[in-house]
Amino acid sequence: MFQDKVVIVTGAASGIGRQTAIEFARQSAKVVVADIDEKGGNDTVAQLKDDGHEAVFVTTDLTVEADCAHLVATAAETFGRLDILVNNAGIEVTTPLHELPEHEWDRLVDTNLKSMFLCSKHALRQMMPAAGGSIVNVCSVSGLVAWPGIAAYNATKGGVLMLTKSLATDYAQYNIRANCVCPSIIDTPMTDVSNGHDAAVKAEKAKLNPIGRLGTPEDVAHAILFLASDKSSFITGTALTVDGGYTAI
Ligand SMILES: NC(=O)c1ccc[n+]([C@@H]2O[C@H](COP(=O)([O-])OP(=O)(O)OC[C@H]3O[C@@H](n4cnc5c(N)ncnc54)[C@H](O)[C@@H]3O)[C@@H](O)[C@H]2O)c1
Image (cartoon, rainbow, N blue to C red):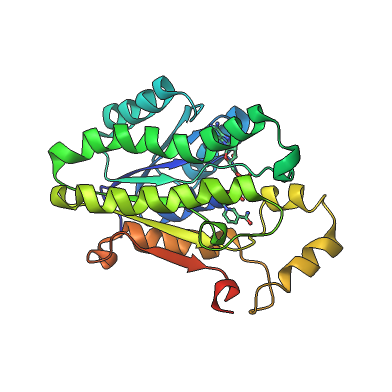
């Protein structure tokens, strides 16, 4: 489905990002893996190469503009073009708002929102002259409704939603689409951390989704690939829930 297409996936050392990189590679894309976690990023690329795919890892702190510029430049230099950007990397902070230190707010906003601005900015500069591209941002149901107890995280995801709509509005004239996916709880290392690695807590959380299970990284990756592909060529500015019905209630 993605023959000759070049995709950057941020946060692809783990969880949803890693699975997204794998699914793109299986569909013949050339994959640029970006992450601050060198070991995890290299592991993802090793797995892709072992399976016969083309991939490269770029160590990137997505909160730093020079790193994001270098990431996009490396994609273009290595594979000659950039077709798809998946802004996936993110962190969760569970401290209640009235106890949240200012520097933690800044770290959260920089990682979850500024990173998407920076990568999009530099990717757009590649995509605009080529008159085409697709950006998929990993938002959350908490960008649509307030998940209890994580106000700062919710705020960053609300920002991701509006960044997505704004990208869609402003860059449609360049044949560049922008969409986001909004997962509920997905079974990843991030969720393990916020559940205190407690299987009972995880099982309880799964019941919040009407479908009765946690989502998988594959569930989210499949939605991302759809939005990145030509099969969604008339879809831009949308927020696709991947939530087992969480927001349908
Ligand atoms: N897991 C869930 O339940 C869930 C639900 C909704 C949305 N999301 C979103 O999905 C995305 C992926 O989450 P996940 O669950 O796969 O998490 P994860 O912790 O498994 O993976 C996140 C990746 O982002 C990377 N990262 C963090 N900060 C970075 C930085 N400054 N520069 C470069 N890389 C950085 C980490 O190293 C890690 O590899 C996030 O945006 C998250 O908010 C997750």
